[in-house]
Amino acid sequence: MIKTDCVLDQMFTDNHEQVLFCNDRDTGLKAIIAIHNTVLGPALGGTRMWNYSNEAEALKDVLRLSRGMSYKAAAAGLNLGGGKAVIIGDPTKIKNEALLRRFGKFVNSLGGKYITAEDVAMNSKDMEYIHMETKYVTGIPELLGGSGDPSPATAYGVYLSMKASAKERWGNDSLKGKRIAVQGVGHVGESLVKQLIKEGARIWITDIKQELLKSVANETGALVVKGEELFDLDMDIYAPCALGATVNEESIGRMKCSIICGSANNQLANEVLHGEMLIKKDILYAPDFVVNAGGLINVYNELHGYNRERAMKQTEGIYDNLSAIFQIAKSEKIPTYKAANRMAEERIIAIGKVKLSHC
Image (cartoon, rainbow, N blue to C red; front, side, top):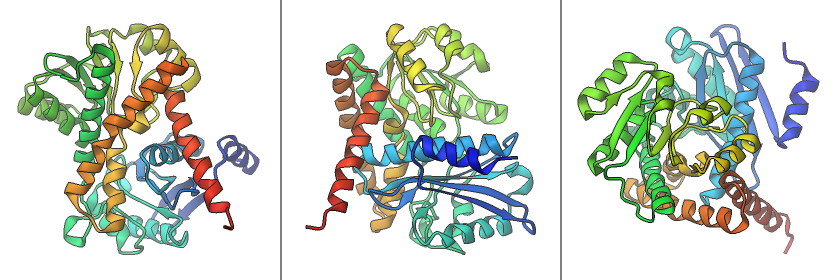
């Protein structure tokens, strides 16, 4: 049971604007929509479907994710705020058209303050169902005027971020011969592996879905490693591309990499503690919300009439953006996550002043 005062306390911590709890007995829908900040524009962020152990866990996740979306949009220079949604339940058991369309009605009730998109366990067909009840959705199939699957753009941004990180660490952005461990080979991870193999990198992969793991290994030639054994590998780059919080005290203690750069959200279990630990261990951390902005950039372009070439060109800006963050961190002697946060916060504050102006 979530107490109201606990919810408001959690909202107050990171200054969330609004949280909407969604319930529908007929379809079995239980969902939470969190809107963190709309200073730069409407809150755009994906809907994640996950079988959370309890509602408190779901709330914590959606609050963290929505804050990350505000920072992601701000750092990428997009005129968007940050929001996120989670649907509670096992997608293999309860996800269907009726449930998704009912969720679409809740999204529509916010009048455009929140725009949804794909996230974990969701796809473009699911967005099509949601779109039947609201226009405030992106990532719909291309036949309906959308951009379809945003994963290739996300993966491209991660790939470019790895190159920017390599240049910062080794003075050259070539990934040829680099030993890279990719944790999670879903849509983004698989696309990333293919790009890295093409450049000549040496790849290890792991995933909880064994059939998917086997398929990607057979197609790309990547080597399979079992779960936690990944952290014992002598690698150059660790690429977390599944769920967050994999960079923690235990994993950092075992890591033998020079760079952490992947698509997962909220990779640091504790920003302050683990950001400092990485510095002490001389591991360069590429802030996740900067690295994985390609998917957001892609769906953002739907709002202005989608053009894939334009979206991918805009995604290329992640390379320079990340390089600038590395320079800020180096010159000010602060962790890279803090430099990225500052870049995002300063833009939100600056544009907020413009919008409050009566001139």
